[in-house]
Image (tube, rainbow, N blue to C red; front, side, top):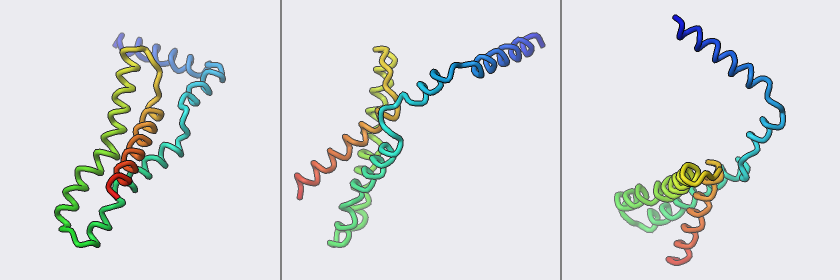
Length: 127
C-alpha cells in the first residue's frame, strides 16, 4: 500500500514538473532533427520505387516469375530496410559509446539516401 502512495506522489511530481517547463526547452526537443519528415518519407518511398523498378521489365521480357520474385525478395528488403537499419544501428552505437546525439530520423534519412545512390549506381553500371 505504501508503494502505491509513493508511486502516485512521484507521478504527480513528474507531471507537475512537465507542465512547468519553459517553452524554449519543449521547442528545442521538437526541432532536434535536421531532416524534415517529408524528406525522410520521400526518400523511403523513392528507395522502394527504385528497388522495384526493374522487375516489371524483367517480367515483360519473359523471365521466369519465380526467379524474379526470388531476386526481389532478397534485393528489395536489403536496400529498403537493411541499409537504413545499419545506419540507425550505427547511430545508436555512436550515441551510446561516444556520447553523440544523432537523431533517428537523420540516421534513417542518410540510410535511405545511401540506398538510393547505391541503386542508381548499380542501375548505371548494368545498363
